[in-house]
Amino acid sequence: MHLILCVDLDDDLGRKTGFSTPVIGYENVRDAAVALATVDPEDSDVNVMFQGMNVHDTLKAEEDGEVEVAVVTGLEGSDIKANRKVGEEIDTILASLQTGEETRAIVITDGAQDESVLPVIRSRMPIDGVRRVVVRQAQNLESMYYTMKQVLADPETRGTILVPLGILLLIYPLVVIAGIFEVAGAVVLGLISALLGLYTLFRGLGLEESVDATADRVRNVLYAGRVTLITYVVAFALIVVGAVQGINTIEAAQEQTAGQLAIITASAAFIHGAVQWFAAAGVTSSLGQVTDEYLADRFRWRYLNAPFYVIAIAIVLYGLSGFFLPNTDGMVPFALSELAVALTVGTLLGVISTLAFAIAESKYPSTQDAEPA
Image (cartoon, rainbow, N blue to C red; front, side):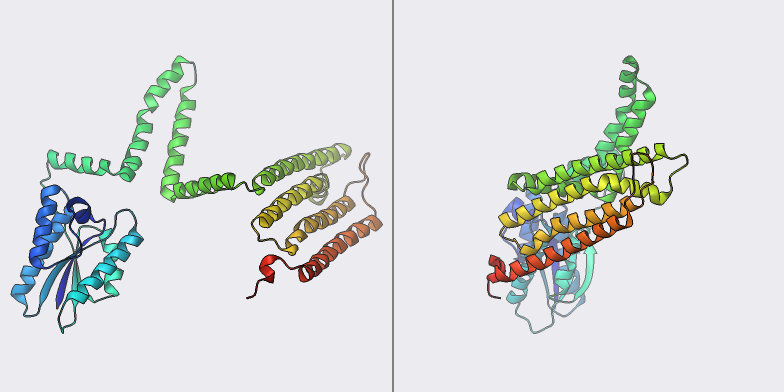
């Protein structure tokens, strides 16, 4: 048996005519097509249904087997939900067909979007063919106007075409205005070119979705009152200050030496001047994260290791960088004994904190740890 499936993925038939779907049977499909054509003669799904009826008549004349035609619809706005609804309607159709033959489908669509439902259909029955309905139009000015009108009516297409065109059309008036205010026209052209280039990159790489998702996450963090928002800002400020202090330390060492600083010496000077600030940034951000985990009832004792680890690493880097500092006026390198003390203290701090919080976690388990598996 051949089942001719006319696919209307965005449910134009149901939304515009009120027909309940699926529509099964030649007469019912014809009534649905006429109803949709009466409400919206420009809808391409009208042609899909008439094409399905045409295929039904052709197969009836050429083959001896049973042939049935039906219309299935999805939902507007969500491809996943639309595909799921189409699958449910196909199950309804198959359950209503009383035949002992294997049911095979011929799918009629009006575009690639509707064809995204093919895997759903193929999971329920074999597909003998797919036909895409293309409406023939005269290649004249009227048809061109109609096509442009329909394309620009789509919000996504409208934004893609009109925004770059609008930016380009603004070039001349903005240059004229810039000349009135004695601003170089090259500056205006550069700014417009940069805006157009950024827009093209965002559209081409699909970054607008990432930007929207990031904005949503930031908004959710603000509304949720998370402490990490504040601590991350403070940590960033501390990192900037630390970087400046590191650069100042390099410049101070450079002034006290006759030649150019070696890479190891310059790196040691930068780390020695910045590591305290970097450590403060790490402790601040980790404490904010620990606070949020506690407020969300996800606290673990082991989370408190983070600030101690940061301090331990900072002590080690401070002692190691101090050992390689140049021996100049106002800057005395650490002795080997001082380096040994720094390495020992950093190691002991990390080990002791790990053991202490492991014991605390075993003696005083958190609520989630105490729950039975």
